[in-house]
Image 1 (cartoon, rainbow, N blue to C red):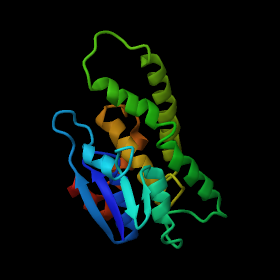
Image 2: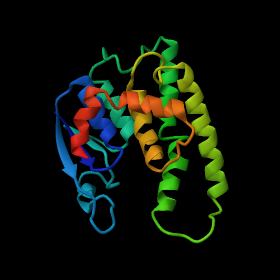
Image 3: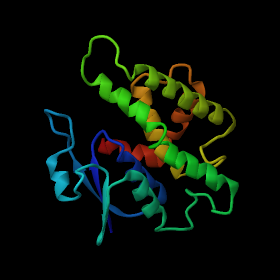
Image 4: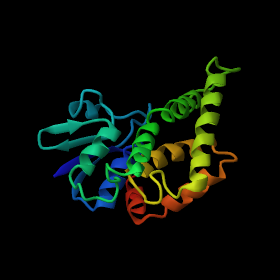
Length: 202
């Protein structure tokens, strides 16, 4: 059985959400953040050398990157509706957004998060670059969602799970001002039963 090492208030919520959507059994190990540093506990290093979450363990396979974990889980059931057929045009939309979440979008969003963690006087040399990247990324996302129900077209997929968690972080940082299509999309997907089930884990 798959074991997921979940860190509260982290992107590892994605993995739990996917498992709940697919109705796959799994064992959950919850890790609390260090009360002083708010970082992941050192206990995670005993499971994976990077000491990061999520970590998935399945027999002799241990994986640490959320995107790779998502693909592994999807491969447990090739009939799942959460990944478009590889022969469809939607599949390549799916691939783009699946990787966009931790590629193009994660850098400016997470950098903003880190810069807000400590007080600073004046501007940072990165501010202009971050603002430009956020504007480009959110304009692209909002425009796409204006004509698509989900990130792989008309059907919810694992790409939506990857994107939603990063967009939630952006929302918490107040980066989505004026992005009405993104906000409407978040309200919609957050009502899914599987999403609601994982909220209790933090």
